[in-house]
Amino acid sequence: MKLAIDGGTPVRDTQARPWPGWPVWDEREEQALLEVLRSGRWGIWDGSRGERFAETFARFQGAEYGVVNTNGTAALEIALRAAGLQMGDEVIVPPYTFIATASAVLMTNGVPVFADIDPDTYNLDPKAAEAAITPRTRAIIAVHIAGCPADMDALTALAYDNSLILIEDCCQAHAAEWGGRKVGSIGDMGAFSFQSSKNLNAGEGGIVVTNSREYYERCWSIVNVGRAIGGAWYDHPFLGSNYRMTEFQAALLEAQFTRLPEQTEHRWRNAQILNHRLADIPGIRPMKVDERVTVHACHLYVFRVDESAPGGMTRARFIEALNAEGVPCSAGYVPLYRNHLFRTHNTVAATRMDYAKLRLPVAERACDHEAVWLAQPMLLGTPEDVQDIVDAVAKVQRAAVG
Image (cartoon, rainbow, N blue to C red; front, side):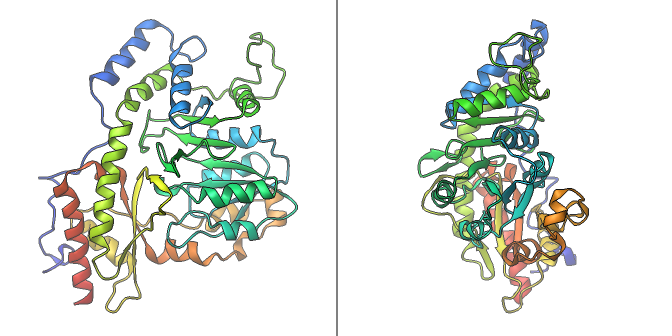
């Protein structure tokens, strides 16, 4: 069958049958926003929705405390500051993630130390993280990439054995669980994003969750211009900034939250079908899901193309062909240490780390040759939508092998 990229008929006509849109909203969001508008209480300081959502979401994720803030990037910076990161402290991070995971370390005067990823999950490899520990290491950031929890058993033990802070980057992992425990509540702190692409979104926004009262109070103070909980308005005993979200964002999040459990189940059900069916296509490898992953958030659906398979096409050609078949996809990340920022940064990090010489083979293989991403709204579709993905992948692969 002739590929659409070569003039053939695509598997899916996206004008006639568009993929599910995002965000999903109805009168719940509209009513919530109107209530805030008419209340005249638009700021979180004099409203009630922000604190209410912080408590609701923290408990949902299995944590005692939550501090809402402006976005997921800020949430990571707040968590690092609350952890007491000092100038020159090293923080181990994976290279296969959004830049905020590492730039938050730089913004708090730390040094990002990149450790390679697991080839089957693309999450931080605990053995690589262990090898990266030095006397200057202060913390580890475990990223639950695509919504799949990292190996929190190994990383928790590693952090404990080496007296390190363990921060979870949960920006893609709302509702995800490892061994029956929701992410964000396993390490010392968890940072979430509510940016517009996320599975729970208000356009922008973030939260830090924790089971530590001490970390909670530090995060709260950092978000609220250095004030102390229960303190006076113009009393600022600590150094902080204004990272507060608005009541409008909190209202959207409360409404969006009502859909999260069902949407999470829907995405994971469709992802499991894809895992099963794509595994039967030569040259296609779904990502491994550890048996200890009890809920996968599926912020992305990621699978691997084997360029080295007999007759295989390049990953770039595969992505171009799959898009032409009506299945939108992308290659995803580049290794973070290849970004211009890390090749030119002239802070303490550059005096100690020569990122230009760094080579992490698993991350580079994933970024350059293997990974194919599908966006999370596609997983909210019907069984017919899922089959279109399978049919398009199979068509492209058949053409590759002849």
